[in-house]
Image (cartoon, rainbow, N blue to C red; front, side):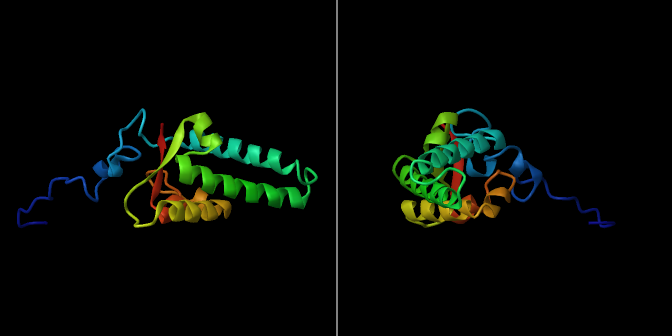
Length: 150
């Protein structure tokens, strides 16, 4: 570059901003509609519904508001997440808001193992609130999964 007359290379789509023109572009997903990456609001609503269902189920076995109820709700949340995501690719809350879970192909994990890893990290909370340009949390990146609209 500089005084020799060289020019900057044309954008290739790799490593420049065209690679991030919309959520999911890097994974070949459409910008909108089925198969696209849902926004934060839709994903948060799904999490809220799943957690509410877990709290409701836990209240049948432990006094509402107690530490036992909170621990049981987390266990129920994790178990229903692993089972439903492994079998159907969605949970009750995700289904209510039109979200599913799909593998990206970047990890060679057996599907239930990927879902288990994702769910354990989601229960730790921090990996879920740290996310990339495709709005994939660290839990999704570690498991090689991505949320998609259904």
